[in-house]
Length: 117
Image 1 (spheres, rainbow, N blue to C red):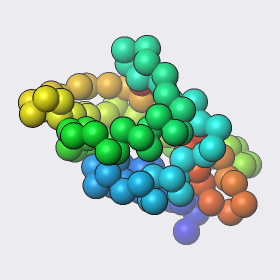
Image 2 (cartoon, helix red, strand yellow; image 1 turned 30 degrees about the vertical axis):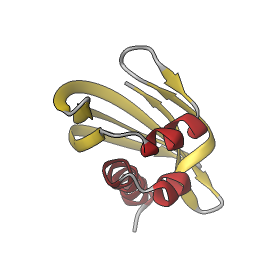
Image 3 (cartoon, rainbow, N blue to C red; image 1 turned 90 degrees about the horizontal axis):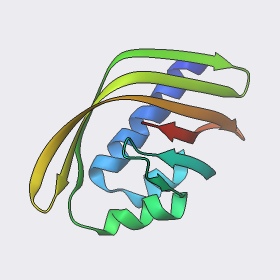
């Protein structure tokens, strides 16, 4: 598997963990020092992201298109258009976003180091 394929697999692992609310999988793919920003300017730490898994709602679907992936040594990014379906108060909403996901290779595993929507 190429480094680019490994990064895309890490992004897919993040997506699946978010939808499944799988704390262990999400913990494994998020770097401890992640900078995680939303399109509404809200910022979260890793602890914030993991704590939200216990709340109702959340990600229902995450679909990527027009992805551009680049790897430079131990750093990589995936910039993509993202259709993000989120459930809040029992209602689903669809956000069309352009998101930058930054990964670092941390002891052989690609971990999300930053996300900016």
